[in-house]
Length: 284
Image 1 (tube, rainbow, N blue to C red):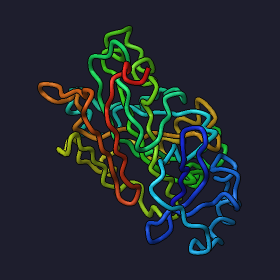
Image 2 (cartoon, helix red, strand yellow):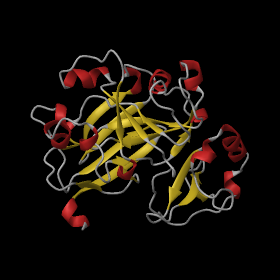
Image 3 (cartoon, rainbow, N blue to C red):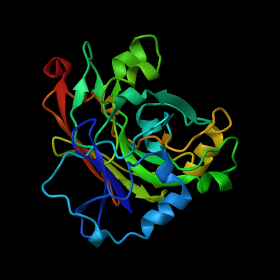
Image 4 (tube, rainbow, N blue to C red):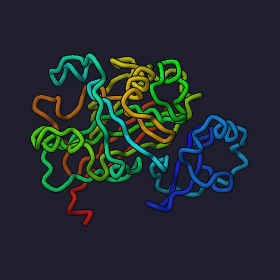
């Protein structure tokens, strides 16, 4: 299943994308797409629905973040071999973990806002594992079955804030609009191998990132098992698993985003995001 939330910001409704690519309304079946809907029993009930019987949504409404009630966004740094090489860093011996503020969440077509005083705005296309079952200190076998769905995120980064303003990673990762999610949640049963997915980024139509999740240093189950030693992972949490080579910061010279740029990321079958970049003053 491909689950979405659509409508104006703060007024999104639940929906799904049918096999023909049409948006269907789920409001008569569920209140919203939140953590409780990610439980195995709840997803099993949803799979009994016949998409063609659901009301078709007319037009092309805005798609919002496809999940509400997200507790935390856990991110992994330097988890692709080619990305570590492009920034000149050794592969980590253990996963590099940081958090991204949930106030950074946005939809898969919303603007990326360059914050005030930003100088080095960057993009990172990432596969996201959506946790469906609460876990703590789980092993890799248990970790594999707690993933309810997968989606995409751009880990938008302000490198000057991240590297030059005290060196705190979270500071450069958590500005408003810095975590666009979607376009939809693809339930895990429809992703046969999360470690064989293409992952690409285009800026103004030019290909910047062209990677594959097979290049990960640590697998999704390994990351979940590792993170769960230090914090519980709960239904609705997001685990962003790192980015391949091609980020703006790794180019020589660096190629940062500026207002007027258009950023796209995509992966089959996870869909495509598309975002204009705007300056913070335009949002006031």
